[in-house]
View: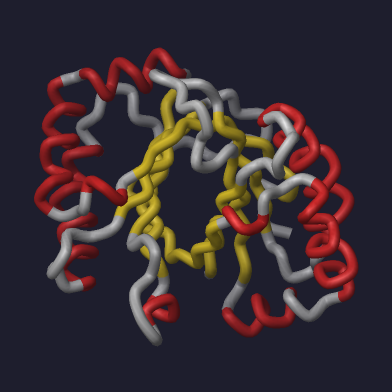
Length: 231
């Protein structure tokens, strides 16, 4: 199963709230959800957390689940994509700032069953491996060494690591190597976890396998369009 992540930013002149409202209530419902190959579809909207950047790199991310590469290619050739979702994109997104990653999800903590009306928040951690580190070594360290450190975070409810698929390295380097998602009950629980001894230990460990200058995080809440059950 391909777990595709599409990070997006508002078009010039559109506020973040306007962008998020259009994405969730118009683009997703009227266009993207009509693409038949999409098995599950979720939009995560960035929410304020900590020091607010003047111009956030992204204001949200679409999560799309597709069966395989064949289904993915077929989805890009459908009328629903070509005459619907694709044509609508300039109406709300700065498409030149979008980042699309196909990942394989590794579930380190399953947590409770996914709920359509969940009020939990989650933090996205987007990282690139340390210069000179082989990809397989990075993946192994991330899953087997760093992952268990995050599992000790107080209040953690669910945790996945999305490793970018091999196809992104076919002719060069992928922009990123992994996007992790960690769920908490609310912003206060997340803040407590990050400031805990376990959170500090996990943060210090990052220097062992990632390039800090290419790391980026943001906090979001979930808006299910299709799911959480697969259609």
